[in-house]
Image (cartoon, rainbow, N blue to C red):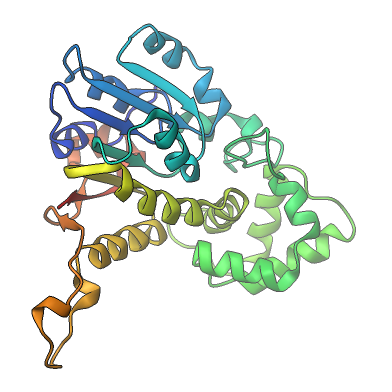
Length: 308
């Protein structure tokens, strides 16, 4: 399946790209956003891209851009951003940062990666298969109550307890090692189906988030991004579910100074800590034409802030 970068036009517009600017694409994926940014940079512009997935680093899309002297691609997760910026000596010098969250189309469409229940494959789910434990290994040992918490907190799954009980009961007899096996187990445990949604959708999301520490990585990269941006630099974040969007929304709100609102208490203006971000309008969504062309953009939510 062709990889289509989500909300490309909106991302390029909101980054307010300067020809000679310095930009970061924190999720290279298959290079769609990076190509768009490079297309607006001049000869002295520079783009640094990251990705935690070795497949993205080794992809043909990455090789196509490697010859561009303005571009550099680094294998790293979000939480490594500041270390990279320190090494590159770009702290406080970046004009724009793009963070595209979630799973890429190539990851979802490759059965060997184990992200999707639509294809049978090994139950892996790791963004970087060279580190950490797979979903199968995690499910083999996770405590039942911890599993309930993960399914409920990360998947907003109302049948979390039923599903966790079924998984723990099943693994005592047979190891859960494939996506089809887990999906069928969840399907049998859920008593009520949501319209147009597979019963395993929420659980697969929750387990993937837990395996990859995705929400912790998101919180980490948002905080680090502030240190990289120069005044006037833009931070653009594309999220795909409510948990991610809630974290981004609260971060932008808090760092804009909203958390220091004294309410009705008498307080001197000098005592109020000023925010370091300025929110740039309301959240944006993919337009109907893009949604018709790329169904995975339907849930995309873009939020933008500027460093003051």
